[in-house]
Length: 121
Image 1 (cartoon, rainbow, N blue to C red):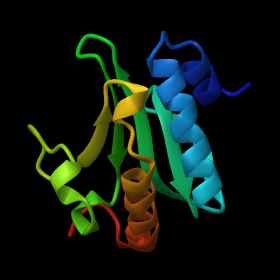
Image 2 (cartoon, helix red, strand yellow):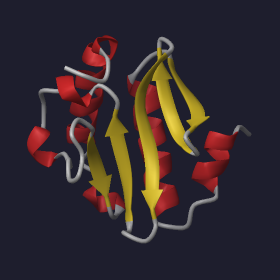
Image 3 (tube, one colour):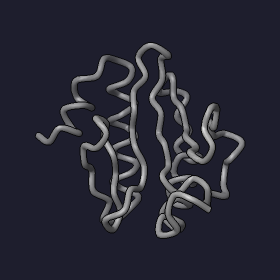
């Protein structure tokens, strides 16, 4: 098992279940995405470029899915968190029930189309 998978499997509930669901959604939606362990968290890469990361914040009680090319995203921006950040946007999930698969898949597909544009606008 690679370190990114270890990170996911070793999380406490409900974080582990949320991460596993996110992993299934990302890997079944974005062809060619590669799960790596960067910056001490699971980080997906697409065509050699950063795509999105999965980060657990146990103190604050959520899983954060940050999108590398978020400056270029155009769907569901109202559901994304930007607090304290200049460019990065993310979706946050406190429980599995918070995860709206339709919204997540729309954002993932949008991120896939703009991933080549990079971090900055």
